[in-house]
Image (cartoon, rainbow, N blue to C red; front, top):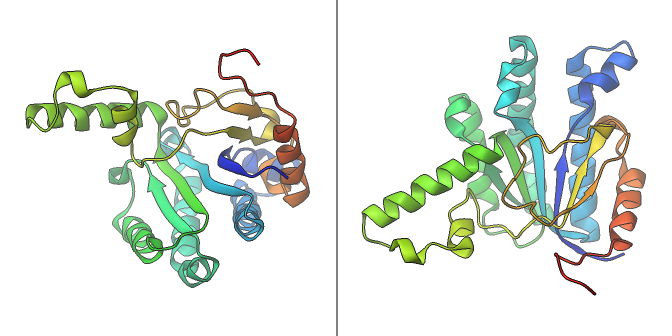
Length: 233
C-alpha cells in the first residue's frame, strides 16, 4: 500500500451514531474516541502515514450544549494524561493546533505536557486540531507575519507562500488525502490553507464505525487517484 505523507481526518458522526442506537451523544463521543485511538496506533505501527491531522473539536463546537462540551473536554483530558507512556513507546510525536485560550487551564497543561514529552519522538506525527478553525489559523499567521515586519525581522517583499506556511500553527506539509466520515459534503473550516490540493474521500460511515477495514478501503481509494496538481499527465 502506498505510504501517505499527510492524512487529514474530519472526525464526524459520533452524535448521529449514538442517536440511531438510542444512546446519548456522550456515548457516541466515547465510541468515537476508541475508534480514533485504534486508527492512530494502526497507522503508527504499519507506518502508512508520516503526518496525521485530526479535526476533533472546532471553535464552532463550543456553541453546543454545555453538558456535551464538558463531557468532551473531560474525555480529552483523560486521553491526553493517560497516553504519554504509550506514545513514547510507539515513538509518536504529538502536536496541538488551535486557540488554547478557549480551553480550560488543566486541559492546556495536559496538552503542553504531552507535546513536551513526545517532542523527541521520530515516528508518526499526530496533529490534534482542538479549539481549531482554519480561518482563525490564517488570521493568526497573518498577525505573526505583520509583527515580524514591524520588528524589521522581514520585509513585505519576503512574504510568499512558503513563508506564510512557516507561520501557521505548525510547519506541516500540505494534506494529501482528506477523509470526512458520516457522508457530510463540506470542509467545515478545516486546514483551509493546507488542503488546497488534497484528495477528498467522504464515506457514509459514522466515525465510531470507521474501523481499520474502512480505513484500509479509504487508503486503497487514494492509491487509485490520479493527482495532477492542476497540470496534465
